Image (cartoon, rainbow, N blue to C red; front, side):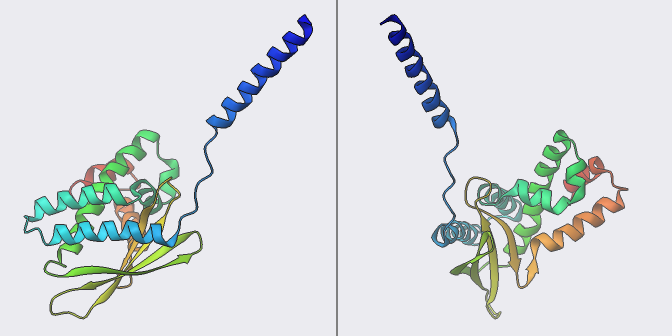
Amino acid sequence: MPNEIILTRRAFAAGLAVTAAALALPLPAQALTADQARSLVDKTVTDINSIINSGKSEGAMLGDFERLFARYADVPAIARSVLGPAARQASKAQLSAYTKAFQGYISRKYGRRFREFIGGRIEVADARKVKSFYEVISTAHLKGEAPFEVRWHVSDKSGKSLFFNIIIEGVNMLASERTEMGALLDQRGGDLDRLIKDLARL
């Protein structure tokens, strides 16, 4: 009888351990759907339309755009992709500082691009799967200009739905920024710290 009690206690303890371990494991990620991707872009576009038609000053708008990018874009993934091989050689502190500086830089750059849409609007149309992400197609309607496409690439690799690329009138953000960032880094002799400092002024 004592042995049975010991074995039962051991079995019970082992069962608790297995249960606890199972609960500690991350749940399998739900696959991103077209509706989720479109919903993210719908929210992003709603906020962009609100910002560009707010009547605020450029400085206030650019601050709003930075908050928008931080909320809806996978800024760390974009920043690493744009930096290229230098991202793998950077220290953790450098990568963190660069990502923060890049967020401001990209928000100002694309915020100014979206400011050109003042008085217009962006409408979300369709979403389609492309490899491991979704491409959401929207149309920008500007006063006095023919409508044009703005495409958004959305992924949930970060753990939630975020966009990681924008294509405006055929201009691919990731591709163009990789070229631009590579040139900026080359101009500084590959000195990432100098690039981080200078991004604040761009």
